[in-house]
Length: 564
Image (cartoon, rainbow, N blue to C red):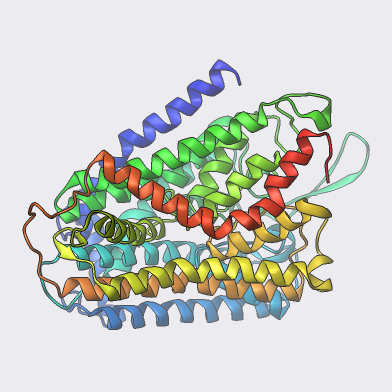
């Protein structure tokens, strides 16, 4: 790895640390109802939206009302996007004349974007019209991200309020997340991407003659605006088939850096928002530190693996297969580590071409529950579930009453936390097992042996973790995978959100006790280590046997000069 690549990685994480409190403080002010720089402009629009929706912003909801409104909103969004795909061939803004989407793929795609997964079993430029991309996908990119932020804000209120019954108002939290956070940031990023050459137009597809005399069709479209929200909202769906490896989506090293940075910006800043809302920024920095340490260790292992001499290629280091020359190895690996840690799903290189160990770490990042920064909102409420488990386990080890932020952790909270951890894990393992023993599941593989298992397992891991990135090498656009992956996305999204809100509803009614000699501190380095340990142990015990049959054994065989 060159010195310039190392400097860029240091700059990347340095800027992330600097921007975390800046954006985090701003978001805390929004959800605490305080005035911000955008209030004079946005507040009138906000009030108009409440009147149109018939919402009283000062009326709060208990956890069941909050969860029901959240579910109904997302189901309506799913049905709208599903229906739009089924009739897009008859609608305007379809210059390529693309036909209606077949039902199984439409179900998968609607589920994917509604759940903030953005898995794509299709090629964007050959499947979806401009109208579907803008009115369907882009809208879901905004509201699915805003849903994640709303849920973690509701969970935070449940943890911090000193007795009560309500968690806020879902519609108000959704609107504020969209108007005050996502839209302004996306406008800035869209303009920056357009300046780098990312396409943003309504032109018809262009035919060009290549140097060899063949005709090539160059897709066009309003890409930059969707790319901005796909990165900032940790969505990840590509406007074009090869996602952020496409020169129209990601043309320059600067656009690559901006998009990578955008992936982690809001999830990282939300940790500081959390600290401000609970009244102790140390609590937020502890979570940030745990996330950052896990990401750095995983990134280090991936880089070491990619830059180690590869015996399959005659001892070559830094193999460029599956990577773009304008980005190189380090930028491809950094992007992969960030996108799988952050529940984003966009890719600028083919994970299928990484060394088995590097690809395995990317998969393991998702398997841990998307808690290494994770999706917008989703990563924070995911790691808070692990925080509750850690406090409970630490209390058992030292004989202290499990408490977090002064409130007792009891049986109901632990049951809900276990449900949130087990449901996505079960989808990954059970659906991969089903695919590996059925002809229809095996037929979609490109490679045999452990690499083929990794292809199938990565797909279900990505869907269940609401990540959306593709390992590559698997033809997922068949009814078997479209349906099963869609089911995994539903479970992975709402199988975690609903237990998180149930925990919030239980905790909000509890009175907080002042710290005592029996209180286990949760704002220091010791707790960071315990939290990381619990996350890794849970992930290791759950997935190590499956990983041993896939990327681990493949890495050992690669070291012996064998590839699949």
